[in-house]
Image (tube, rainbow, N blue to C red; front, side, top):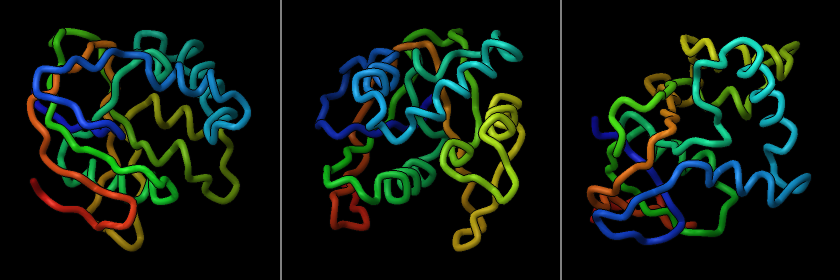
Length: 166
């Protein structure tokens, strides 16, 4: 199954992306990381109610479509001064556990909502926010314990660019 991944670094086809980098970054930055408070809540809910699913902190990430990845990079990294390289990838271990969920549950707090409630919906996997200014967009991410292999670079989004194809 081919899906789509981004990195601030240029990579070559065949490069293997190891799981756990996100968790390493969150732990290293500690309280200065924007998801420092959310990730432990999401991990606690996963361990208590969804322990058969892979941990966000020990996974690799991607989006099911290129359009979803481009939207994620433009919106999720809008304050990031780095460039983002976009890649087609596939799992090295096809049978490794994975989970598909709405990544906007990590960042959007609906009025009256709790982080625990958002984490519950994330791990249930069926909930999708509607994006008011982009009604056709579904904000899905795939997390998996499998390493990913880069198949090819499919795009690039720089800090002041909308996006371009290679």
